[in-house]
Length: 111
Length: 117
Image (cartoon, rainbow over all chains, first blue to last red; front, side):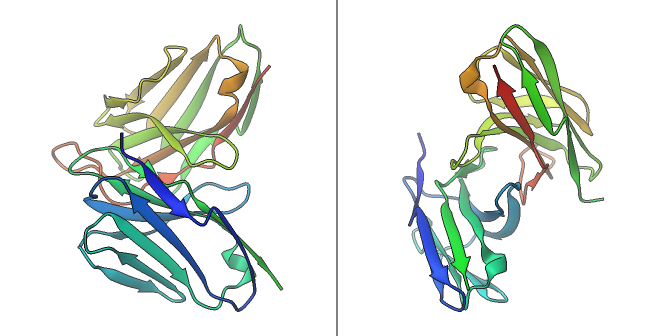
């Protein structure tokens, strides 16, 4: 079945440092979504990417979808303590109803 | 209203009990989902309902029984659970196109933290 892996599993940064998480799918994706889950919370949608090579920005967050539509990345510039949480990518293949979540990257930010 | 509500927040049950988890949304979404999430793991899809019909069952054991009474409500009936079923159960909803296929973002509820003794 489809597998979606993320690296790193965990990253600890000082506030102000940059952070990147990488997402790799075993199959070609029709689209990819990113979610953030704060400790003790539930996943919250951040963005959806659909086109090959697509890049989208949301303030300090930059999302990229690979040319082959099998990988994606999320880059956070100048992290803040409010960025703490686990970031999941989630991919959909074809017209499937199912969204497969990546393994997640837990981000810890300290002052 | 962009909220998905779930009750109860916490549930402790014995292996012989029968209980139900409830989920409600008023965003007009026609796709609703149940996920199971263990600690430090991603959400795992259990069921998808599209236009009140079950469209995906991810080979979930029959001790979990979903129900979608109407377009706003989703239930998960629990019976004879095992301790390894203890987890956070998340409900989510999203738009679905006219073909019944979900698309766009999923809105998650806060979850029910289930403990099976």
